[in-house]
Image 1: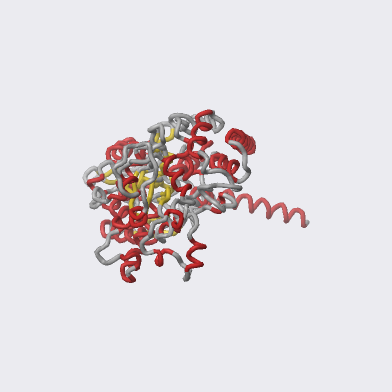
Image 2: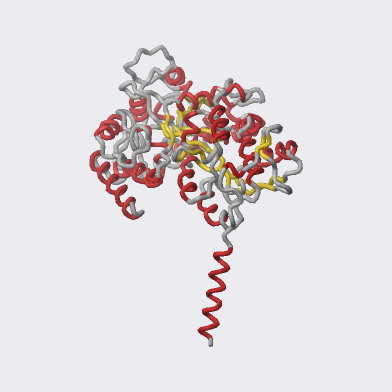
Length: 496
């Protein structure tokens, strides 16, 4: 009897679980109803919407503007990390618990599309988005010739520097014609190659003391008091970036033409980390200064590249402790949040009239010594629509609204991100923002992170070619071979 009861309970549970999957309200764009007079979709009766994003201030502003425009359609938000949304939506979407619209990085589009979670935009909406957004940004939302997301902002690595410090430093040796009188002018005049910059930083021991220069506001730069503590903290202070991160290291592989997954980054057969193009690129940028953990001139005393992460690179740059870094606009966004506090205390000599761009600068990366520009990854933050939404017309109206100039202004003003719009003049202040223009200058020499499935498996092998070199003290060729072997194992384990 007990077995019969248990069996019946099991059947009930199975039917309950299968019955939990929500039905799709609108499968295709033609299921939506367009209002020609209002130039928007017809809102469903009693429609209410939920947005997933990871920035509370941004969400509050969007909700405020939305409610002013559509007071009868309630919009709420939930704070969910953009990189967590794809996995969360796989569970919450079919269960009817997911947001109607959400922000995700563009490399999540393929995964979510293949999981059947994203609503496909109509041809009309696709044409509208393509007319207003950058071509490179819309390209990453396309899967098998159909658009499944809308670009919001673009980001890429650029060369960031502290103007106060660089102005105090002497020029570095270069084969280029030199008109500069200090390192700041040399960088901004593009009178130094990347390899020369790395070699020069290494010759200083990558610290302030090694430059022989008087660093302004030195007492404001270190957290510990006393000369002895300041000396201890003056380590890797000229140049530091996230070494243990493929997104930030990728450009070092591109000197001689390497592009992961081929020229268009979409050929899964061309991971090619063992390419001679990678070999020659790496050998050029490591010179005799990069070395390994036993004797690096560029990073003396660094036991492992895992120790050179966010906290030791960009975070110290934000505090004025590091002169130069390779990073993205999020670094400057955090600086802007602290700037008024610094002005109140007079830190770094900042006053109420001082602007962020008076202290910090951004420009495209220095050229390689073969006159080629380093190629960086770019990322696109996009919005997607949950195919399981109860209110597809309202949700698509929200998608379109999030791509409007009104919200693009919020993307720029509140989050400090660079809107994906074609016409930057439509965003007040963007064209006059020299820091954002620096990122845009490098964006010309960037390509989107691959959107093919294999792109999800490339990150550790791309990163670990440097780990193999530095931590494991391998030759360049052996480091490449090990990286390729690791990538192939990942493919095998994933069933590829």
